[in-house]
Image 1 (tube, rainbow, N blue to C red):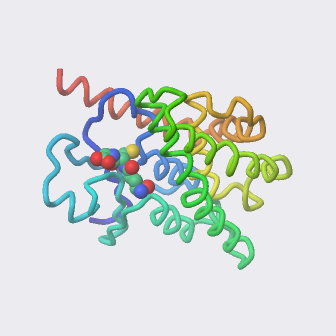
Image 2 (cartoon, rainbow, N blue to C red; image 1 turned 180 degrees about the vertical axis):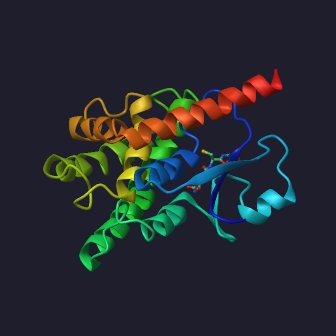
Length: 217
Ligand SMILES: N[C@@H](CCC(=O)N[C@@H](CS)C(=O)NCC(=O)O)C(=O)O
């Protein structure tokens, strides 16, 4: 298959819409101005062909002229190497982008995702496991990120793929009011999501699933 093809689910229930991880890839592609098209894989009946592309039966994956890549972080690094709008070409800038991309995934999101899942499933605030996740995120991670974001509009200097991952992870926390005591993080999410590329990516994902509803009706 020639060109860039991004695969996402054919449909998802309403709650995750706007947050399905293909948005990170759409966002990057829009920032870079790279042409791409969308293909779909069934959400409800995941076939071996799906697991052959994404071993956990998740989305997204990207195909670039026959090269198939899963994991949003790996896909963004691949795209970063294609466009200096996503990752600087100098050694320092590329290295800063990579370290912040991994920090977003492996230091911030590893704390934010369990917290968000607890919020999503309505865990009571006195649940001891929730309290542990709450402290992990709000004591061990966000206060430190606040200091970085107070000094820098974007993590690696210019806007990069690291900001796509970090802002997307924080956006989910913000959805559950988790950033109310973290003004720098909240302002960063607002700054990132005001970018035309995010707006387009978000609108396109919402339209994709709305069309899927219409097709199922
Ligand atoms: N680490 C993976 C996670 C992908 C992921 O969580 N995908 C979600 C969509 S937002 C999914 O496929 N969920 C369905 C499932 O886990 O069964 C990545 O970043 O690409």
